Length: 200
Image 1: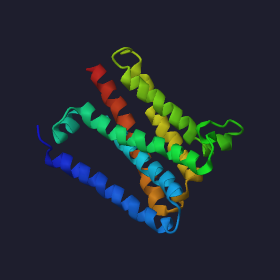
Image 2 (image 1 turned 30 degrees about the vertical axis):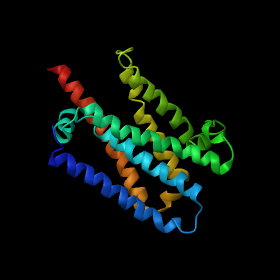
Image 3 (image 1 turned 120 degrees about the horizontal axis):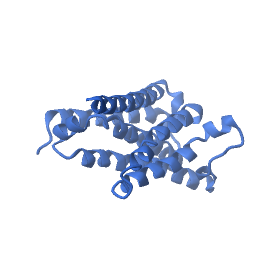
Image 4 (image 1 turned 90 degrees about the vertical axis):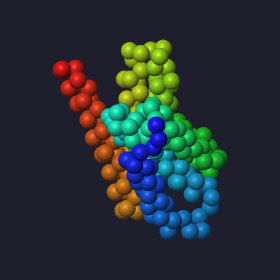
């Protein structure tokens, strides 16, 4: 099956959104060193692709038809970009700071935990990823652990709103908070559809 018009429009929409994010990002990137720029860009694009991965989950049939490929292949393609980018965010931050402390969750205070919520989010991300990889071995439990991706998105957006440099830009703040709300709505829709099917 070939890529259909709907799939092409969806991909173009993601590309357009990525370009808009880059254009909003560029004015604050003047004369900044490469490593801090990479830290920020990887965070933005990682969250973008993880959000897209979550957004499409209730639409298995529609995605399959639009892309002309099995849903899981499309889902995994977006998730790979998201996981790689969001992982490189703390990696480059560690390089910039010459410290691995950014990988360790902080529980000193409620405020500090949420300001640095990216650290537990990364750990939860890999738990959710492992659950997906082990779905054939633990078919009864993998979905519950994989659903932790929604917790990752929650921790990530709170972390970004509290200390994200680029969230001082109103356009970026609106885009990413809208992505989180859309992913949350997608999660609710999927649960509602599953519940409706069980009632039939």
